[in-house]
Each structure stands twice: as structure tokens, then as C-alpha cells.
Amino acid sequence: MNKSLFSEFEPVSAKAFKQKIQYDLSGADYNETLLWSSPEGIHVKPFYHREDTQPVSIPGHPKNWSILEEVYILNAKSAALNASSLLDKGVEALSFKADAKFNIEDLLNHLPKKKLTLNFSFSFLDPDFIKSLSIQTLEMGYNSHFNVDIISNLAHSGNWYIDLKSDHKALENILLNTHNDNVIGVDMSLFHNAGANCIQELAYALAQTNEYYTYHSENLRSQTINYKVAIGSNYFFEIAKIRALRLLHATLADAYGLNENCHIIAQPATRNKVLYDYNTNMLRTTTECMSAILGGADAICNLAYDSIYHKSNEFGQRIARNQLLLLKHESYFDLVSNPADGTYYIETLTKQFAEKALDLFKEIEAGDGFISQLIAGKIQKKVKATALKEQEAFNVGKKVLVGTNTYINSEDRMKEDLELYPFLKMNPRKTLIEPIIQKRLAEEVEQKRLQDE
Image 1 (cartoon, rainbow, N blue to C red):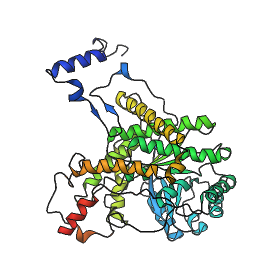
Image 2: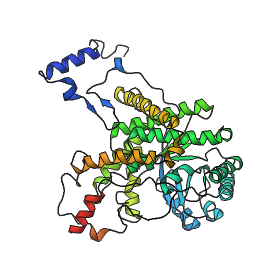
Image 3: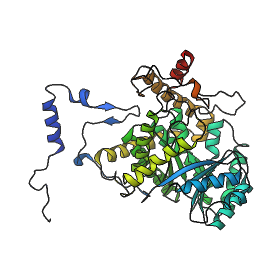
Image 4: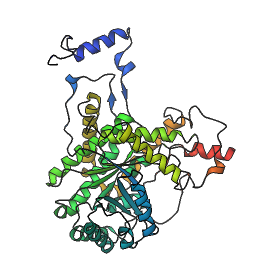
């Protein structure tokens, strides 16, 4: 057992590998034949070798990940009872969404009296309500993340809750009075679902975090930033994206002397989900959840295969939940805490993502910061340019969505099954800035097919 199994084999250098590949190409050009560049400008090689790889230490990588499910609050007691039933079905953490204030006692008193992680996401900003919620969740022994994100609200809606000064004042009030270390969230899923590439997602998230650090660094000494990340179908790139996010966050936090660890919630992207041949969405979300696990997300909230056209339903939720349960309990994706560590390709991607995102972040800061560029429309313009390139690639079949623009089932019919409007809704209103618009790649193709049914 003390003898290495491979001691009889001579090590093969990177140079020897490349020479053998060039020989087998029989005169074809190595660079033109085997190298390719991603939309992010990442040059991908046919092989990676230890000689060319610098291991990257990822700070704060979690030892395990939680199965998260989202619950919408219309009635607090009903939401709590629904959440309790989900905990009995394998869910390990909860995310509550609300568009209006609710009865806090009704929610908390009907949740199980055990250690729980609760995430909250509100479409309103009310410091007194959040302070009260923080005190009561603390008394119940729950670990709570409030995900207050005034900048994402501006980017998504086009308006502040009130105005820049008032919104930051409200956030300061919450930070000073909640006695909670998980107040601020950064929703970077908005950029992905609007068509941004991985480098843009990382740079914009970092720039957004920097805005919070600039305004509130004195009140963020023990705070943990919570990132919401959308995961696409480029398997290895998405693994590297999450790893690079932790690395970039730690670098920025260290510059301010703040907490280098962050909390990451990952969810499959909506941008590549389809209406026709919708069962392919299950394949996409499965590999996307795998990327999130291997990349090191703290919690994963799966997307139901029918979420774009069906109202929330037990069957769709059950399938989404079971995908995560299978990955965790039958595929043993919870037994190794950092399986991507040391893999040459992913280590190289992580380093490249971090370097390119840091360069873009520095450009944003040199241009007066994220908020200034958002108000000037520069961020929106760059996201739209990237999204347009991806859309054009989809339209000509270079970007493939099986069942939608390739291997199409012409007999598939959907018009009768639509419970939700699955396309971009335009709601003209007065806004301070142009909002960043989320849109699926397949929308125009699907609208035409529905008209022809």
C-alpha cells in the first residue's frame, strides 16, 4: 500500500502532450482547430496541465449546502404552515417573499421551534418592520438573512424606494438597530437573466458591494453579504463563476477590513428556460444545480420545470425538490466539501474570471462607480449589447436550446396549458433610469409558434 500505483509510469510534461496532439492533427493548425474563445473572452484549451496551473485558495467555501425552497407570503399563518410541510419533505432552509408587511407573530409562531435558516426578500423598504422581524427571529433562535438591496431595486424597477439619500438612511437605520449580521443582499441574478455574461455578472456584483461598503463601512464590521446567483447551462464556467465570486468578495472585503466570507444562494437561470418541449428544463436545472453545488453555494433553490407558464403547483415543486434530494442523498453530492479544488481546468477558469472581473470592476470605479454608471445608462447599454449577441447566436442556431431551435417537435402544442403569461410584460411608467430587463432567449420563437397553433 506504500507503493504508488503510478510509480512505474514516467510523468508526461505539458510540452509532450501538446507535441502528441500536434502530431495527431496531421498538419492542421493547433490554435485554429482546438482552441476556442467564449463570449467573455476566455480562451479555452483542449487540455490543462499541472505545470500551467496555479492553485487558487477559495475563502469561505462551505462544508455543506442546504436545500432551499421559496414561499410567498399572502397570509402569514398559511405561509408558515406551508413552510412547515416543506420541512417535512426534505427542505432544509426557507426563503420568504412578500410585497407587503405581514403579521410577524403569525408567521413565526407557526414555524417549527428548531434551528432554521430563514431568508427574506421584500419589494418594500420599512426599517421598523425589518427591525421588529429581526428581534423576533433572534428570540426564536432562527438564523435570518434579510437581503436588503436598495441598489438592485433601482436596477430592476428603475426607481429608488424613495430617493438615494433616504434609501441609504433607511439601510443605515436597519444596520444600526437590527442586531443581525445578515442584512445586506446583492441580487446578481438580475444581470444573468437579462443577458450579461459571467465576467459582467461578477464585476457588477462586486461594484454593487463596493457601493454598500463605501456608504456603510463603519456599520458593516461583522456583516455577511448574501449574494443571489443565477446559474446557466455552461457547466464548468458556472462552477468557476461561484468560486471567483468568493475570491473577489474576499479581496474587496479585505481592502475595507471587513468580513471576507460571504453567503451564496444559487438558483437556475430563467433566461434559457423554454415553453415548448418543457421537460428539457428539468435536464437544464439538474446540471445547473450540480454546478452550484460544485462551485460552493451555501444554499440552492431549484426552479420548477413549468414555472414560466404554470402557477406554483405541488407537482412542479415536488419534482424540483426531488432533483436536489437525489443529488444530495442518492448522488452523494454532500460528502465532499470542495470537489472542484485542484482541477486544472476549473482552477484556471476561476483565476481568469477573477482577473477579468477585477479589471472591469476597476473600470467601473474609474467611471465614478456602479450607481453613477447605472444612472447614466452605461451598465444597461453593456448588458443589452451582450444580450443581443447571445440572442443573435440563438436566432441562427449557434446557441442551442434543444426542442426550441434544434430538434423541434412540430406537433407540440402549448396554448391551452398557459396559466401564466410567459413573455416579457411591458408596463410603461415613469422611472428615474432605464431598468435592466430580464428576458428569455426563446420568447420571440415561442410567440410565433403560439400564433401558428
